[in-house]
Image (cartoon, rainbow, N blue to C red):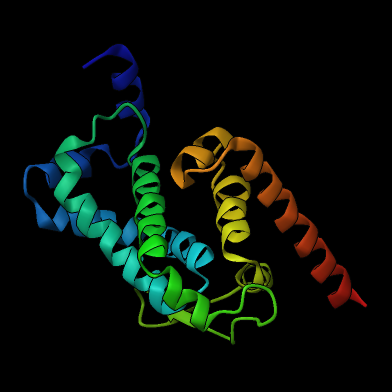
Length: 189
């Protein structure tokens, strides 16, 4: 292990659980799941604008994490690796279900209903006002805004993930910001 990897491993609160889970300990992986479920679900919900799709993407991301845990090289935190995996899983989902999503969600007109997603404590995670507005954004603008504004990806990384130029990523981000600002101003009136 390199010095950089050791430094990250020492700082990562999930390091011991990751090692145990990578050795086949399903209880350790369950603990990782419980620690990260809500944030992964929130990311998937922001990207899909659908509680059902977000749940499906969340589950798929954790299945992939379990299967690929031995490829995690500890050059970054487990949470960073998991969120990258969840982002890519959700993007794959959106590509596969694009025509279905267009039928269900209007690109700009309709807002998502008062939706709730599952939580680990048998309760529900309610969408915040911002999340409700995010769900109204056109798909590409919503995905770019979530990846850049919420998750902190750079436009170059987003462009690579989506197969677009970094300029298009920036344009979609600004489009999303302008629409959100417009809707927030309208709600304040």
